[in-house]
Length: 79
Image (cartoon, rainbow, N blue to C red; front, side):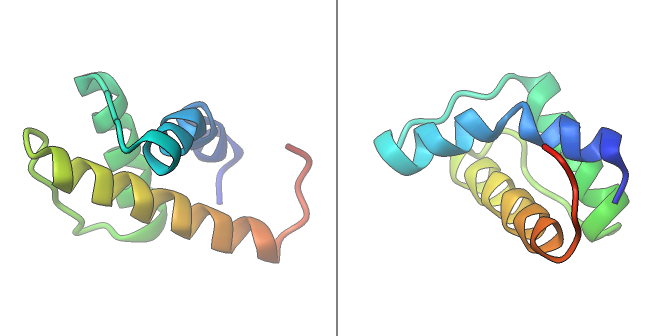
């Protein structure tokens, strides 16, 4: 996994934590697109999401971090 893609996702980890703790999620269109781009490049090239569906965006974010965490658990990298 590219370091640049790890960094792109990590900058939104606080948004995932907000969702998990408070059930609130506010991502601008740039953040949504950046997360989607990483998913498509690293995890699933055919992934699609309705960017205007809040539930769908949260599921996308959860998927991205689930996949990221799986990969980080199998490689050694300094975060």
